[in-house]
Image (cartoon, rainbow, N blue to C red; front, side):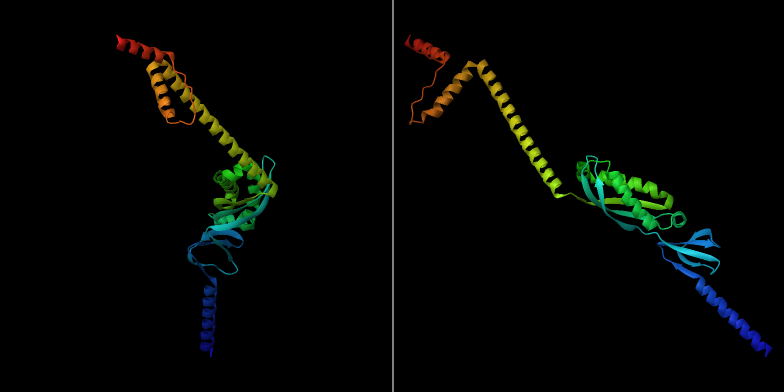
Length: 257
């Protein structure tokens, strides 16, 4: 009787131990870590794989180390040139220090989201509207640098920030369109003026060359006469240079002699 009682007690104790061991087992995936506390005090970071957490004595907080995507809702931003726009963005970040992410901040997801919103407004407010529209890569880098520096104390690494949309009101869209049209008209006038200037310079060079060579001027006159000779619908009075006549008269006298 005593033997049966002792066997039953040992068997029950073994069952309890097995149940405690099973209840203490935790399986952490490759991208997970467990922040373990011993009687409320931080002990160590464990994982991945199978770890043992003693119930009632140890507690574990599971952390995901994969890159998370945070959608920053649309924010009202006033640019440096006093233009009101709505801007939204997306932030890519991950936990690099599980201990800090658990101990230093109560909710690292919520804290990062709020910080991203305020940082977006603060950084973009230092730039003009043209920079928001044309220099997004630079602004993305500025926001990422500021946000990463502030979340470093929480064990968070901000990998990238992308501005998705910069929304303008209808009046501002019309003003930008008018500005673009005026800019195109200005460039067209400048190109036309530069063409006129180049043409005038070439004409001046041609005139100087013809003035230095009298035979070139005579050939030019003869070429013009050839071009208008075929037009028989009108009478054309064409001035003949004295030099050309003198050469012709001299040639005639020489032939007569």
